[in-house]
Image 1 (cartoon, rainbow, N blue to C red):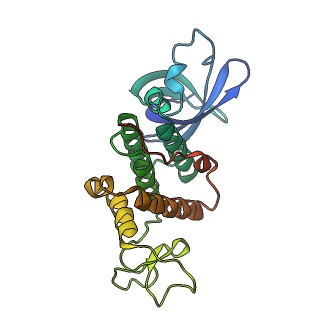
Image 2 (image 1 turned 30 degrees about the vertical axis):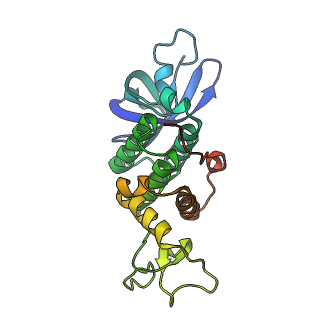
Image 3 (image 1 turned 180 degrees about the vertical axis):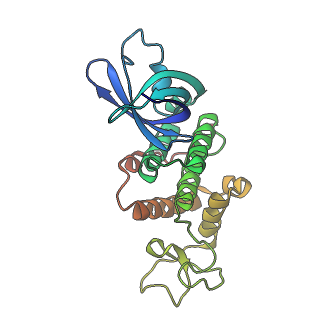
Amino acid sequence: MPVYRDEGVVLRTHKLGEADRIVTLLTRSHGKVRAVAKGVRRTGSKFGARLEPFMVADLQLYEGRSLDVINQAETLASYGALIAADYSAYTAATVMVETADKLTESEGSLQQYLLLVGALRALSRHDHDSSLTLDSYLLRALSLAGWAPSFFDCARCQAPGPHSHMVVQLGGVVCDQCAPPGSPRLDAQTIGLLSSLLTGDWDHADASDEDTRSRASGVAAAYTQWHLERGLKSLVHVSREKADT
């Protein structure tokens, strides 16, 4: 059977039989991979802890008929324990891996892989407030998937901005002429924060107030779920409380 090596971040796991586990991975070169880790739930397993959600590992796998099989795993980045120790970081990471699972398929997506690993690293180090890291990840992941939002020019007719009507179904802010009746308006601070999260202007994002972050989070969540065409089960558990520093 063909054997291959790749780096992968663990998205989720499922029990299989008495000792095995099915691991869903987003890999650097092979896209999303579902593989069996045999004996991983036994006490003496050599790489059980290396295949938990949010962990990044160097893997050796061989191709199976329906599922690949993991026969080696070496830890590259151990984010799992650090993220799990903080509830807001944990809930944010759970939404990230669920989003990555739904956005990616078997084809390789190096940009999506690097984006997810970078976001998990930022959560584990508390580089920014967890809600900001999550919202930035969602907007960037959707952009990489071909659904980049517009927060300045009209998303429908490209009329130069700024504009304040926000319509997620149309792709972002729209001008007065394109805005459907009753469409909500966003204040300049919220639009500015959304733009900063999309472009990585962390100085501006970190300086934002809680009310503005809350409004921006609502937009990011609505935009994500609209374009995924299905809800994110983990999103309802996200903690928006500011982490202790």
